[in-house]
Image 1 (cartoon, rainbow, N blue to C red):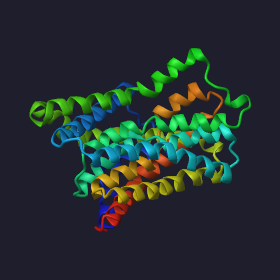
Image 2: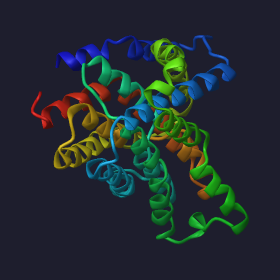
Image 3: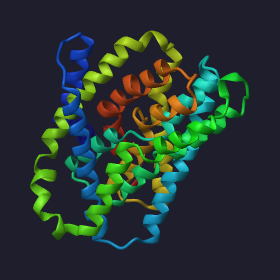
Length: 328
């Protein structure tokens, strides 16, 4: 529990809490959008580069391939489970439930970045291939959601028009976070530790400070989203935004235990599975399921699940990883 407490009281979590409280209190605090986008690109580059360098040190083994496969399976599986819970416990129709479920099968790269730093602060080591897992888990959930929505038929689940299919594919596979993350991963893998030594001061030494500022901005965004969209969410829907990450984390913990993953890697896989997308999936849903309500799925993922994961969830997931590896 000391690990969980130290994570909860780390600067990155406290800056996020500061931003969220400021937004809920209607503070005029803000971070210019251009700066926020620049910080996001920086963080994706830093995480990808670090992962690539770590992967360059070790060959691609069967164990690594199994972890990559586990990430893909989880991304296909979790939306189905989320969809069932939403249909049983809330009044959401099939399309809104499918669109919302997609967010919980995909991943939040910002949550992953925060977890990576929390794992490091906890004294645990993590492998670079988890960055590749994060990239692979972005899109399968979207495919599952489209299948779930189409199963019911009706006017709200019409297939994407042919003229929009290309745009949807580009949005799913070529969104900015995926391109930067995978590109930086490849660069780090090719250049290796020696080749990236000259950029280490920029991507390593400044990382924690930039992450604190970025999470301050994310706290502001989450607080504003919750303040403006809470009327669209029922008590049962809000509850889903809290218990679904915990259910997902237990499923991922089972996979991590079966694969014999070390604690740091297990914590990151669990966090990835428990996180909810609020960038890639909303963009895809606007194209694929335009009649689904963003006021529901975006408010829930960004205003409820993201704050829960960053403040409370990550310490729980690290502790869970320690338990399944016999270190808890």
